Length: 125
Image 1 (tube, helix red, strand yellow):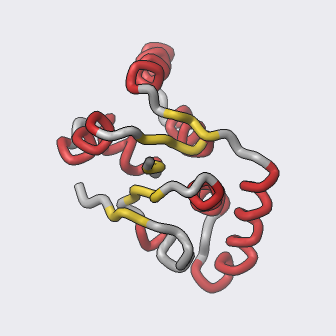
Image 2: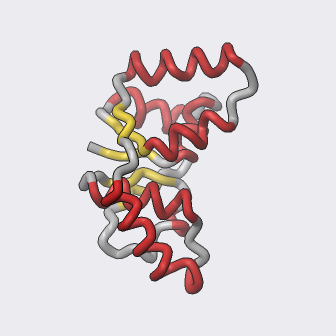
């Protein structure tokens, strides 16, 4: 199973055909961090309701943060915050993919490529 990054979901919500193929034709999951980032972009209650329905209907698994994910994210930050500018949300998303053994689908591969143990599928809209 794959774990989608926030940017792929944003492309999907904007109507991108390539993102639609990924999200509608294969089982996917997302980190609770991705879910929260998407919530921050909602403009009104109707969008929020539609988004929640979409997640439920597509059976997108939202993976919760755990102490193990937090520890792994801290480890990634300690390794890469100074050398590569790794950000907290990206560290948590990478750690989620790592702990749950998921391939991360992202268009922002530069945010993650320094984590050699993380399998990445690059998305190009």
